Image (cartoon, rainbow, N blue to C red; front, side, top):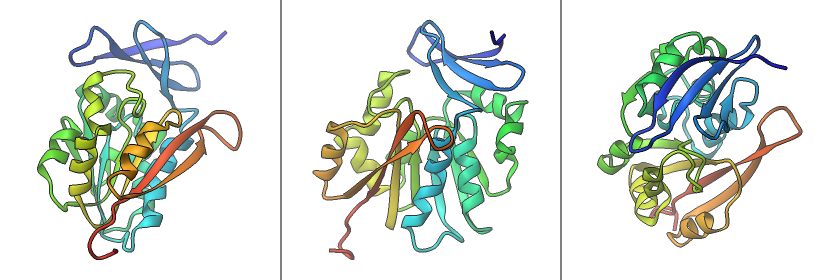
Length: 230
């Protein structure tokens, strides 16, 4: 039986729960207190890698792309984006919980290659929604790994991102020809329909959490249709 050691807690805003970081001999995991449910681990991060990599296939110029990632997590999405982007790219990662940033600057960061230390990385210590509400035509790629997707798990405050208003704000934060990538633990019927009603093109990708078998997660790639493409 694996022996896990708790390394830290990150209280969730407006909640009586927290994220907890645990380590055993080989891996790190982040869980939700109370439920014990595993949110992410250093052993299974294939879908996080895909979230950081796949959107670049949808844009014309990755060399100096402006990218926004919502949610630092264990750093794998940020690392994958940096590995795919060019030297002139600028990648902003928004993380609400300061403890998660500390974990990534500590021993957890070794597993993802310490992407926060990359000179192309810009850390926004705050809610990604603050950026989305304020920015217009700022990003070529917006990649969102917030909560568990449309079926919120850690905070109902994240529901705005997946609402019609949130989709609209995210779309307006894109440059022409840009793409939005949404991560979700499972597929969903209502969210793609909501996106489609905006006139955007949405493609669903099912990706393995680890290797080429087992659990799959969902990534939606959303390409808004602008005047130049109609």
